Length: 407
Ligand code: F0G
Image (cartoon, rainbow, N blue to C red):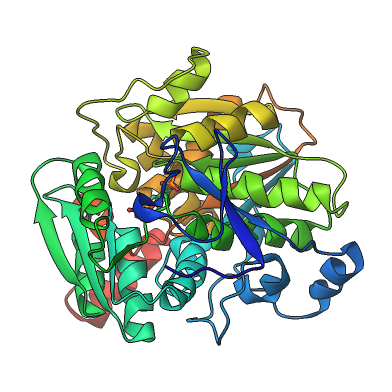
């Protein structure tokens, strides 16, 4: 495999550095996770001038590993940051924003990581692109593989993924294979499949290039706010996005673009919360959840591969970790849609559910950003199952009298 000389891949545990992704995507010496370390830095002036142009992942290419050609892009990033206006129940919090990642090309934040990692996959000579997924990574991988003219293979846990996400991945031409077990089983399988010179290139977030793209979420927040937020609240599954966000913010601080760092708030579903439990109990290791379960299928993960990076992000940021119930998630999802016009998928409503619990313990003037990771069109069945029958009328007169009663 061939990397590029503008970065190295460094083990987060033993510190050994590699010029290219090693076999198995982990440190060959100690087996731990790798992270990308860039040789270049971003100058503060250069960063702030980006405010004048269009945002998007590739606006930050100076802070990304070089892909050596035109990136494989569908126009990812540059998503809106919207101030919450109508949710009076968030009082006393005064400054709550939603970063609406559902507006990415395939409807989730995964596209930020996929544009970078698939671009690099080509540099590595990848033929077939591979992942395990709870749905969104699958759809994103499939789209970027199509764009790159490569084949995509995705493994999903049977019966545990929103149907629309599978159909989306299939529409982009991916081969979707259901496996018995849960996401953790599927991730174990793809990790083994991708080793041994198989020519299959793995695009789950243990591949550190994914996180490089996803860290641009932090960059965009700082550009959109003109400063670092005080808190960023986000749903956590495999632990990739929280690790990426933290990397993005700490880089900005090291480059003296921001002077403060946010506290990260990890939100997990009650039935799938190994990271929240490990953090709150002060554990050194992780106690996996053998049979995770939540309606928020995107984050239904019991053995998160990136738990160590995620715990580190929480510890270093002085963060918080919370669990919320499926009922709280559904109530928050419904309020974001009816109160703010933001239709998000279940996992993406978890941060709002968490804020309802936290609102009295955060400073009222704190600048809080909730990351809405995916679109509500992703798991439509959750809404369809609960939607009332539409009213039905026969003829204009019946319609007029109904409207008179209602408005
Ligand atoms: N929100 C959504 C909508 C997701 O799809 C995921 C993860 C997360 C949050 C959690 O992010 O894993 O980086 O901590 N989805 C993965 C997938 C697992 O396969 O689509 P994380």
